[in-house]
Length: 107
Image (tube, rainbow, N blue to C red; front, side, top):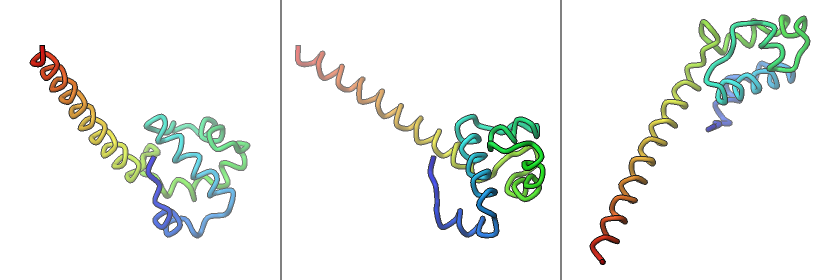
């Protein structure tokens, strides 16, 4: 997962230490799973907070997300990473084809 420190600090300087930890865990979960659940009990578990404390911080953290706990920046990075992965896979398969042809020609 790409992480842009200057952007993160610029966007989150107002957060408390607990909110930083919770936000970062949400980001990591989002990256690993591709989404976040829209369920307070599950979100509290993801960030490792009791549900009552999660609810105290929820509005502040939700401000970083769009409806349905979607994150524009992470979605864009996931698309970009998928495109890079696809290009590398295509290039790798072409390399294998060229190598096979070259081996065949040497016979």
